[in-house]
Length: 219
Image (cartoon, rainbow, N blue to C red):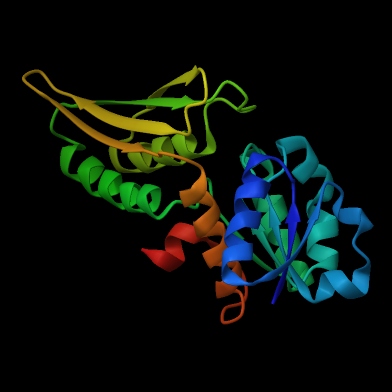
């Protein structure tokens, strides 16, 4: 397997270090259009770019690459359009608002807690904290958590975003009751967990096809 790293920023460099440790061939690029079609078709592209870049490039990714791993967030409003296009091209895509195994476990825990508390008089809320360089707010992970809570409770969950320093990522889902408060928190110590999950997803494309959300194939 050969992997193209699309977006050669901090996440791209973290992915690069994991690929080097595992002895996996890779090509880093800031411009996926520069990868020739014959090479691209033999590669899995891991995309950690920007919302605008992904919106501009997703058709090219689906047209050229053997499979695509999408860690970029901020495109949920065109999610159906993107998924339909990948399906029409027969290109495998695995996407996630967060590729961390711990966060995906959190998704499962929050779904269970939300179902148990749906009619128990608790008000849900979400607080997410990230580094000051992060472009989207709320984070894609926070939006996924809010959707999980809202689907179970019928609430319109409030999300508060903090952008400060070099925080890798902290997400807290709280349920505020009259007599107590329940919180579920995930804190990332670095970006390495996200990168490892994305690489694992890339390796999965050797065995699975189609379009999948990461949480649906690991939890």
